[in-house]
Image 1 (tube, one colour):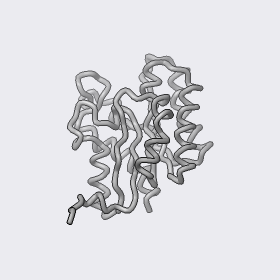
Image 2: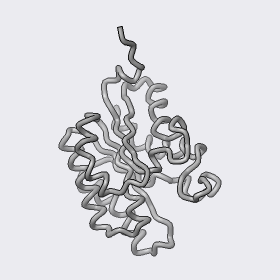
Image 3: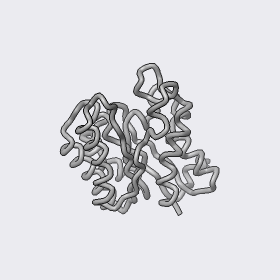
Image 4: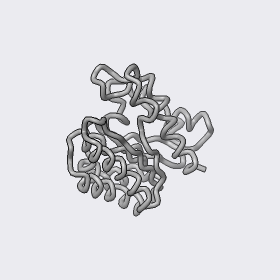
Length: 192
């Protein structure tokens, strides 16, 4: 008889679909917020497995390209879409980013998954016009597709230098619980 880990018996899957901020860049996988999410779900007796399909350096274009395969492989009940930061840091056209995120959301919804869209913000050195329009993409998409929205992945983290690794881009292990709380606020109502 084969023994499976407890998560193998879970009824439903939550797919985390992000970039390095969700892939625990520079940290052990155990320390990342997606792994902390699995622990929280277990602690609360919620029957979900977390599948983290995040890739460091991922853009919305890459995410849009691979979403069909990820949905087929994991068949998630919930998809947490946390992409766009790399698009913004590269100054890519916002219309392109929006179209890619919309494709990911539509594909997820067509696969009968509920979607949590996770917003990102850019540093002020990208200019007020671009940074404001960038943040609004998430709000507009959530409204248009009637998805849940976590307004800013790094709320309560971004302004605290001590919560970042030496590259000043990637949060430390200490920041991961705060990031999870930002996700959990929007996610928890979706799981009831």
